[in-house]
Image (cartoon, rainbow, N blue to C red; front, top):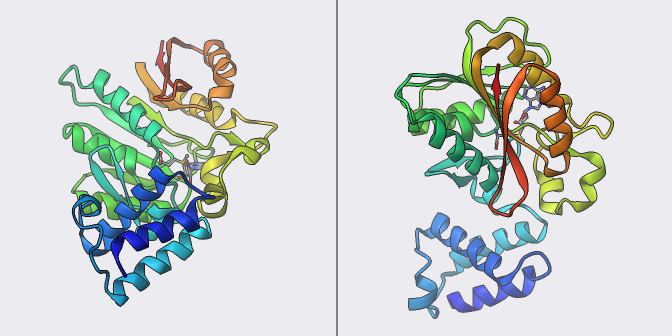
Length: 283
Ligand SMILES: C[S@@+](CC[C@H](N)C(=O)[O-])C[C@H]1O[C@@H](n2cnc3c(N)ncnc32)[C@H](O)[C@@H]1O
């Protein structure tokens, strides 16, 4: 079968799920991962003959995509910042808005040459702490997650990328004994309420870990309240919080932080113009 015919099959079968551009991007990821072919092949060799064996591989992936499995879980990896991270369904697939949060932090905090002590809350694949450590080698970077499987994936990613991060399997609700004062706390916590589920795509609902995504309708800011309590004891005076947020709660979050002893609050929009990031300095 010709490459172009495979592409047409993907477009026919997946057009209810994705736009044509998204389908092309998925197919490019698959052929890079399975056969190490660059995307240029679609332009220069659309009639390339695909062997029966390779056709079977692409058909298997197509069937998984039809069942809403994200391409990142099919190939087991994704890009974040400048690095490739291994992912499986025990961890959230890192998102571009989280890259924006990390870029914002690095842009501001790399200006001086001080070594900093950082804690990331909610490790997932380890995309945040590993990127920070790789970009700022002198920083001491720690990360906690309640999920042991996530910690295992993050440790594998750290080892492969040669990033010296300290990972701990801990529940933010139960930490009372953190040993060192922190300069920076960063977190992309779960922040979507269950009542927003109807707006969430099936590939997210069916495959990504719900404990990484959802919070109860009656307490949507619960995780941020825990971060505040933890920061009161463990963030240095003048230390900073960098948090990813649900745009619909931006005003409630501003109110929450202004009630306690935090000031210099800054809100930042993501690439799509939605309020998505908060930076708050502790008094
Ligand atoms: C939105 S995901 C973020 C993952 C990763 N930082 C990223 O940006 O891709 C939130 C993470 O918080 C973790 N988590 C949920 N509840 C937690 C708790 N009580 N204590 C610590 N981590 C928790 C989840 O297991 C999940 O990995």
